[in-house]
Image: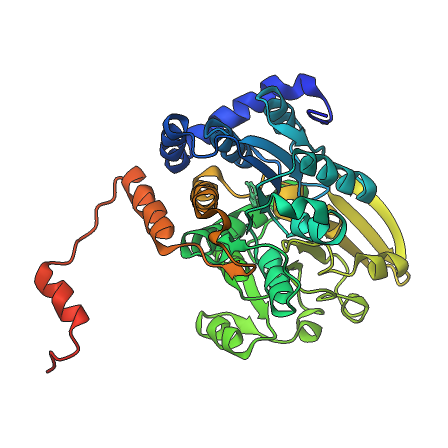
Length: 416
Ligand code: ADE
């Protein structure tokens, strides 16, 4: 099958979005021009499981221009942009994705994406790796390596590697500085606020805004919420991150103490049951809950719904009326609010992440069978190249070390 999308007639609208993203992604544009000439992926097949957005679309086209046969499944039931998916199908990408897939359809799409028998996999959440390792081991013989885009996926892969259960090499693109310092921090920071506002149109100024988790995503979100005038509280389980949050000027407390005072709660932890029954029991009526982590396990929506009656009041806003009359609002079913209720991170920041992905795919193909079954970091040269191209695209120049300075930094003998 070549594609399965919601409505192929949406392709024209999707193409305009792809063009707009291309315009805002100058780094990958440079890489794509080189790929067109050098064809680093000639004869290679790349299967992807990513959020189907206009930015992902630009990456897919760059890989295809580099000579690859490319397939794409969505990496979350609510993150696919149907117009983009239609436009990609028209551009010859084997895309299997539509917004609102159920669990069975989700895996049907992943299975279709794997029909190309990939040499390289690109994941956002490690679902392709999981599926291949558990149900499709016949594909392992063709696979050179995989790549992982998100924190949650890297956590799963490192756990597999520690258990000796990882069956092919994977590169942790999420962990490279040009990815997480910008995408996780500034991308998630902005797009999560965007999702909350598009869903609810609430005013953030003056609200008590609780962020669960002070990793790169939580840090970015907390700083953006503060910038909008919210009073931000951080909850953490890591003592060092908790000190950092405190010194960054935020109040830090356990979720059970934040629950009765928060107006808006956002989870950004990668962990399950961060907000659950005991918290719902003490929340103020009117509290708004959202999640920006990869899986919909951070807010226990099932427990919330069991505690009262549920109604959908706006697109992406569900209300649960508790037995005592308090109303708790849940955005985007507790799925990642930035992609389900908005369009994900802006193109400019995805430009860096997806340039990393494009160059890592090229690196994997060059390595061939030299790689071991472990989690690799992105090679430093790739990270530096993406950073330099970003600076160039912004017209920013930086200093270079003189030979004397270089010597000074590398010579431990020179002292006071
Ligand atoms: N993850 C977060 N934002 C994204 C975007 N715009 N495209 C793809 N993946 C994303």
